[in-house]
Image (cartoon, rainbow, N blue to C red):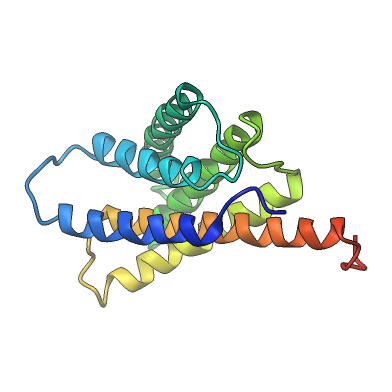
Length: 185
C-alpha cells in the first residue's frame, strides 16, 4: 500500500496552485525569501495532510517549518549559483544555476522526507525525482515566455507537481516490486 493518499495530495496541490495564482495579484510581499518559504510550507502541508498513517501534529508542524526553511536555502543556492555560473555564455549561466538550485531543493527535501519516515527514499529515487524537478523547472522557464512570466510561483508549482509525480512513480514501482509484479526488481 502506498504511503500517501495521492488523490488528496494532488487535489491539495491544485488548490494551493490556484491560491498562489490569486495571491500574486495581491500586493502582499515582494520578498522572495518569504515567498519561497510559503512555497515550501504549502507543499509540505499537502504532503503531511495526505499521509495514510497520520503523524503527531507537532511532528507535522516541525516538518512543514523545516521544509519552508529548506526552500529558502534553495533560493539562496540559486542566488549564489547565478554569481558562480554568470560567466557562462548566453543563458547557460542562469539555467545552470536554476538547475543546480532545483536539484539541491529536491535532494534536501527528499532527505528530509526520508529522515521523517514519510517516504523511504533511496539514492536512485532521489536522483529520479531530482531530475524530474530540474526538467520541470526548465519547462517553467520555457513556458514563462509565452505566458509573460507569471512569477516565481510558476516555478514552484511545476516543481511541486514534478516532485509529487516522482514520489507517486517511485511509490508505484516500489509497490509492484513488493507484490512481485515487477521482474526488474
